[in-house]
Image (cartoon, rainbow, N blue to C red; front, side, top):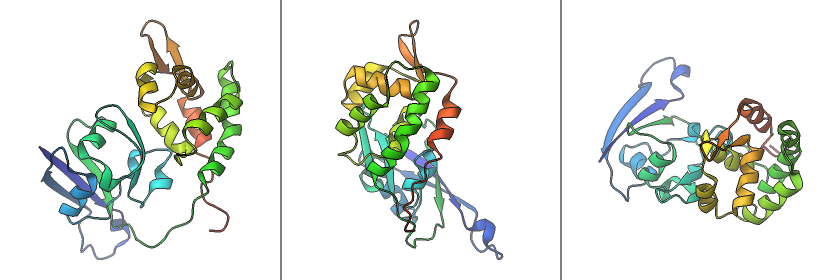
Length: 231
């Protein structure tokens, strides 16, 4: 199998003498065991970045060479997974890439960046927002139920709220039974996560469909300051 990677050099607009190309396209062979890091290493772009594929988690995983989540081809959700552990096929499956083209950024300075708040602190900042969203959507349960779900399923795995909601909001509809299995979560708790993310039950489709509040929810969740005060 072949894959095409289009590398974009983020420093290009700031270089007076254009000695490097703005974009470079590389085509490579890959198999079922090839990882994302293998692709980058084989094209001499070992520090390329793919954080642009994650809206809410972009700043958390930028220049850190890991994915907030990946959905494996067998349907399991893998959290905080390194490029070096992520199969190319699973990345393509996660992001529904059918043309076998990956867009990556290069030229990113490798100096140490700002530190991030602890996952538990990020969740504590998110809970009041989820309470507002629940009120906005008129849900029958409160943020206490969401806290219980998060504590039992996500905190021990160091899964940030941005990762969870990036996953949920990556689709416009979910089969709650399938998602329940992928998350290893009860069906009732899965439904609650979908509802707090703006999904509504469609009795005709027999599935949960994203309502018209995605922009409002995304804007609220994106305002969280992820950096600790000592930066």
